[in-house]
Length: 175
Image (cartoon, rainbow, N blue to C red; front, side, top):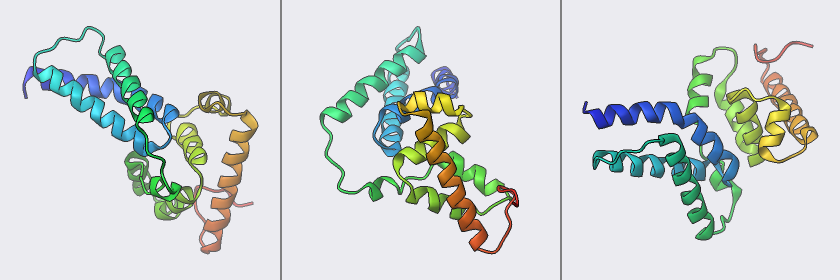
């Protein structure tokens, strides 16, 4: 592996979560966030292969993300259905659920797909990034009560669906 590739991997590993979280909060769908992030890293990698030296990669990548996001919104075509966006699966969350024996990940994922985009973002920030309810509300620009309601109603719905299947899952306590 050459020096540029090794340096890129270090930068990628240290900036990915930060940039993904930023894009997820600013973009309309997680698919958009993932597409923009992928194109930003690809462009950055090409620049590194050409020998460009970047003094502050995190700042540089964030500016690239902001520009790509602005480009996206300025040339955006209105999506006909939110169902198209709900087909995107968060691979990290999916792998984490696959490794867990406490509940069936397909059922949880199906329920989250049925929820709206805001509910998905709340779940990702709260459970995936370990933000508090207050931090999640601030990051999404909504009231804390909205976050609590969406979170607890969806958890209640998931619990009800899981119990319908006849099993007891470690994710939920027996009442």
